Image (cartoon, rainbow, N blue to C red; front, side, top):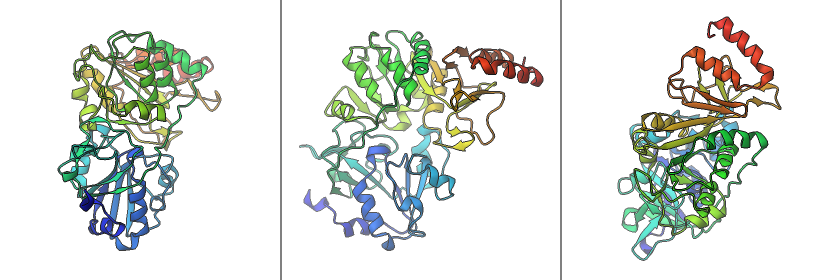
Length: 423
């Protein structure tokens, strides 16, 4: 094993000119390896680092090493959002499940750098909270690992043998904890509508945010729920501990909780450690609509920022400015459509800016990007009710959406809809 340990200079020697380095999401981001790259940037030539959801602010994100080290984003984060608006970060549109394919076609796939749990007695490291966009390349692309004793050892298709890596460094660093946003009264009202449609034995995909968290909080008395989700969050731990999740009625991976990455608190990370009930699979499997559809009773729960009267959801822009990216919302919206008894909920509070702006609009704010199309949307929920979109005419959609808008905006929306000939 010692001959695989890399010094800083040895790491740099492995990085070729014009290299494309791929990083996992969130806690898979290798802090020490990035320190090494930045500290030796003058020795690099036109190296690009490809990543979704960069976790920490970095000099290279800000373009500090022109011609040496550059960031390419596939999902904006707090560390990159403002930089994108300043023209410093490239953002590549994508469906999450297609990311490995995009990387194969558009990069050299020179190297993958990732955090891993310590080696086990069989010579395997685990990518821990990750499988996401990188695990598909195990055995095909050189890996440099950053071994961290705080990374939980997990199972699934995220195991990598010492013979499959170019080398490793060590850096014991506590994982970043994501604190769940507080659940408000409106969130609970929306969650109540969604929870009423979830039956014992359904399989859940749970998105990020206060509304999905609120839904989870109402499901603790359910039984035999399954989990097939891109992001493993704290609420899932609560459901397991309440006896609501056992996966026995799933159609694929029976009895297993399936995710492609995890992000949350230390409670979540401790739950994952050496837990054989959880398996992390590549995003090209977890988020493939064809795979999702095999779970015949899949229920998808996501959030959006605004909806027009066609039912188009803009979930990656805020007030017409880019905020994140598509993520897996479109993947699951499509997947539940293929599933025999699939249900897809896209949720939002009816207003923004302390009630000044309606999130339901005649047309999306200029600059907004459609995340979930009018053809894929199933059901939209606000604190004022449920609007079923799938199979409905434009007139029916407009009427239903107006009925779940905030009351003070309904007359205006009705007037505009009539003016456009929608109703």
